[in-house]
Length: 362
Ligand code: ADP
Ligand code: MN
Ligand code: MN
Ligand code: MN
Image 1 (cartoon, rainbow, N blue to C red):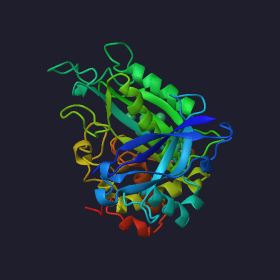
Image 2 (cartoon, rainbow, N blue to C red):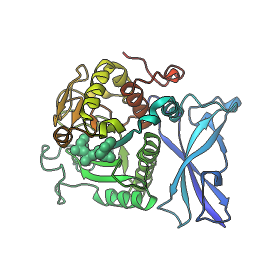
Image 3 (cartoon, helix red, strand yellow):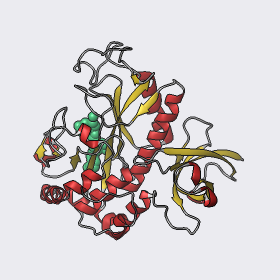
Image 4 (tube, helix red, strand yellow):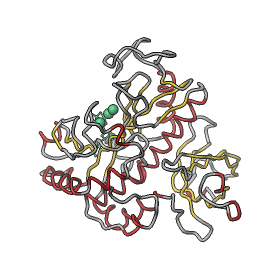
């Protein structure tokens, strides 16, 4: 029977990559028995995505993950792809391939779990929902986790997106309204379900698909989600992508010692991480609005002004995970995961230097 497969990949947007997608009609024998092999490689015009010159423009899409398409028919799917050049090498914009290498070089053996808190801001007519034309809403205070038409803006979109994530089978953990009007968060990652893998590759794929779904659903409302880390200047919160991370050793009794060791290593690599945690980070990491200054590295228990926060229950139990509060809303989860894994687990990663997409410490 014929199904629709939406192939999703990341373009060559600079400095921030964006998702692109196109649809393939596939004839499958049994739509209930799809595997990655059900999806052929495909090509596209890299000269239209800032990834190739017009004279030699064909790039290859290789399917690497798939979920149900919650917006189309029952048998349709969303297919996450990596980009390769004609010689079969990962394209320089393919940072998922870097994360794969870090996993192969010892990351996987640490059994890492990850969870992202993706914040975003809904825009219409050039301003966030809830901002009146030519003026400002009431000061921040009532909007975080707020309810009521005077506090919550865009909830229909947020609800439709959450339902879509569930229907797709994404590892969505929860949602909340954020501090600035029109700003929201969804979390994707570890949520304690036996059947699913919270490894960084799978979770990062799910986050990119979750972003794609948000952008796609908001189309129906004429609204544009922004992942700008500081969409509004002044006394308005920025938008981050707090990244929660653990290895097996951190999750076992006495794991707090492993977390402390990780924090030490992260302190020593602060500049490298900052350089790769999303464009425009300095505007958000000011030391105000629940952030730590970009020039400082601080860790703390339950401290929302720290770079790394150890949640109170983790400190009390003596094992668990930590939260890296630095990544911006526009960060690439593949790159954040690759850096966290390589730094925390002490994995040398040759490929970090082989693509100009990864910046050296400033
Ligand atoms: P916050 O209190 O910082 O707002 P949230 O409730 O928004 O935190 O999100 C919690 C995040 O922590 C989720 O993304 C979840 O997947 C992640 N998480 C929970 N436990 C672990 C763990 N053991 N390892 C890694 N991530 C975890
Ligand atoms: Mn959160
Ligand atoms: Mn938040
Ligand atoms: Mn958080």
